[in-house]
Length: 447
Image 1 (cartoon, rainbow, N blue to C red):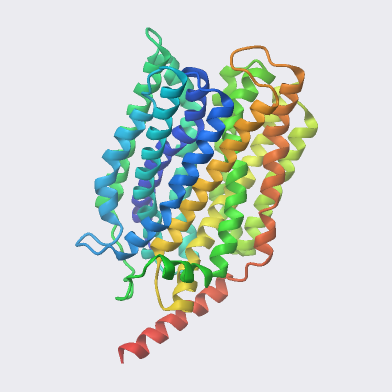
Image 2 (cartoon, rainbow, N blue to C red):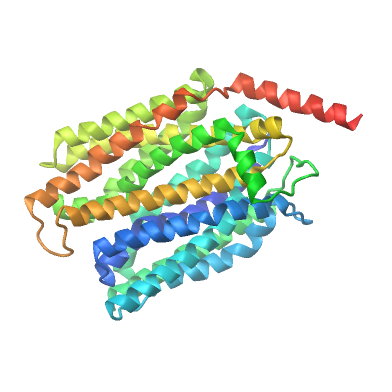
């Protein structure tokens, strides 16, 4: 069993990662369109191209992680050396000067791509390490709950405080200065938190000696892990919905309700109920099993999204109520799916004889980037399609489109995540049998 001090120390790294990730994932689009004047349609293409190009590098990073062997372990070195680089690139992403449209767009592409690569180099080893801390499936649920809960706090927390902080720091100067100062503040905090994980958490599960493999073998190993494929597909769909739900509120509240100042409250409500759902996830997983808990969470989030659509946007209070219910379901789903993903490490080892945390968690980061690319690109493309123009009074058609994008779109996409889970068969009891079979096989080899 892992002690709570170790779980918390491991979680600090996730908090740091997601302070930076949440800032970039939610507000870089706002910075591009509202501050340096990139058109929504151009920003839509940018997010799609850069995130997909960056995602292609993730399997390579997984291969590198699985080949890493140092006195600090396989994963920890990346938590020491990468954070300062990521910090510098985070500030650089919000320091693009407003030049002519082509030059500004080129700099946006370059800075965002470099940021994404550096985030991969840190995030793949971080999550891969979770499978090297314990083999117990139930212990993993509580282990994963801590970093994922802190990740939600970091991601949604920066959504709450970013706009007030930007306003504060830009009070006597240009708006971009406020964004740069906030970027530096978040980046510095992330470095400290990730280094805390490096110094306080150590790997416990040894990998088999034969870890080296190439890209072709990586594809074969991935193809043999059916539970991994199903979980990644379910997570992809829920994260596309989450990305849309994260980007649209700034536009939705500003124009549908003339309540830009309510963005922190709106996101704060979602944050609190997501935290409650995250804390409930181990309890529900123990009562019903992980898969059933995830399905229930998806159902709650979907129904809340559709309820918000039917309510309309005549008043903000009912929408806040529905977003609170959606957060509760998302918190349960998010933690449970990550715990299920971790269990596929042993399934892959059982099927192939190779323990490939790097492959599995780089696949997860690849999926997250694809989900972010799809969610951000679709959201911004729909803004353009519905006639959105920054800083002006929007038409009724645009307002209706914003409402649809904020409610129906994430609700329907999230509901589709249930489909792959219907085929998922790696329950807790089966996972325990697999761990036992691996142990027995290793003992026979040792003899």
